[in-house]
Length: 187
Image (cartoon, rainbow, N blue to C red; front, top):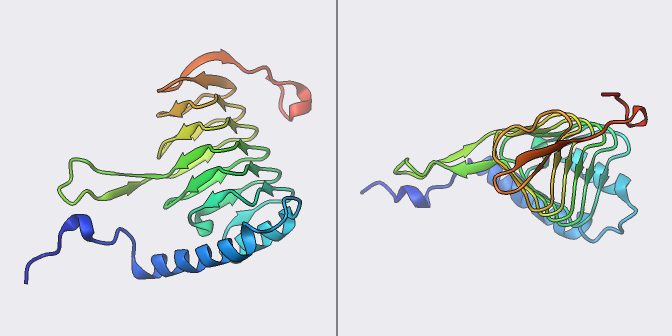
């Protein structure tokens, strides 16, 4: 008997795959059909699957969360409709962080130089008041420091500095975000 094709091997253990199957059933039946204002209901469902969700988080019904047990949201974080949280490793959202519509937090990739095409995952972190704008993408292992902004359709391939505004593919810093005292932080 020969070794199976490494491209055909499961990237995750059976327990993980079963947990995701159960989550997908719950998401399809209870999470996605829930009315938009029922943020508390969706927080409850995510917590039941191991997510750490702070007070006042707004997670919208059409947000796609791959593994709730690897999601950590501080108070008042937001994940919009259509946002994709692909989190084989931990993804953390700081207080008041925002992931806008159709944004993609991509927590894993494949090692293209490995004959087995092995999956490689790394955590993603969004600091307090960081914002990932619509259709923007954050790659594995990237950190957006407090108040950083990743503009519409941009791709973050490396860490974004505090209060930096980044645009493009790959994202480059174009300005510094003004931070008022009302945003919880001064300059």
